[in-house]
Amino acid sequence: MVTASAKIVGVFLRMYREKTGTKEETLARDLNMSLSALSFLENGKREPSIHQLKSISAYFHLCIGMLLGIDCDLHRTPLRKPESNEKSIKEYAEYLFNEYNSGTQYLQGKGT
Image (cartoon, rainbow, N blue to C red):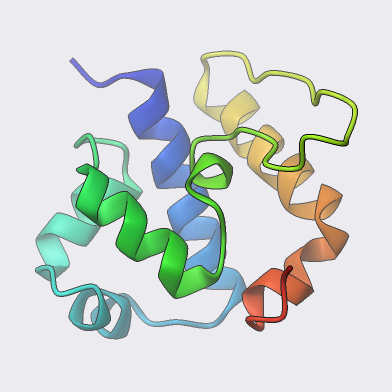
């Protein structure tokens, strides 16, 4: 059974990869995983390991919580939570992405 957190990670992973213009092959190689393993993660069909979460968050300069759909800035007002359906998760991913200054500071490695 696929969990909601696996789906959230998959949506965020694909969104960040696409918004940075990173090819699947490049990301898989850089994260030291097979293309099929990356595909399973992006499609929410596999729970990521702690090691994979750390690698992905370091690659995109994000906190691990961001990949899980959690606001990492403790000084901010709590963000809304996603529903469990895939459309809502994608909308939530876009919402979080946009909340972080359109993600540009984080995607370019300039985040604080």
